[in-house]
Length: 124
Image (cartoon, rainbow, N blue to C red):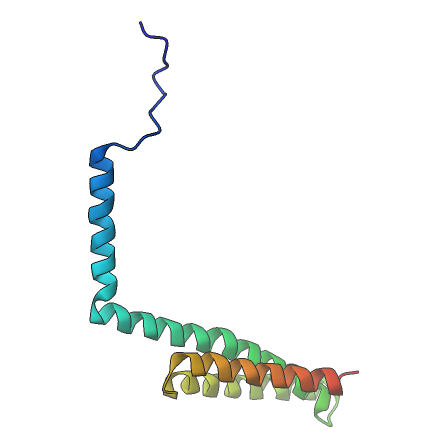
């Protein structure tokens, strides 16, 4: 019997493992170079810009309108939330209408910062 346990393995990868890893990595790189993969990534980036920054902008607009609208608190909250849903839909459409993906991220992020800044100025 040997002194090594059955669960010990060598830390050096075998030649077969290295070869299979290089084949897998080559296939992944080829997949990413395909035209449909690039298109899918662009759509994913626009959709995430629309969902994330659009939501942040709509939420900050709802908070701002709740504070600014000259109505009782309950009515201004309900009105602001309904208008924020409309703004969120417009933000999603806008994210897919701009030429470049980073323009959607930039513009919606700046709009949300603008609304947040106004909320800080107008807030109580």
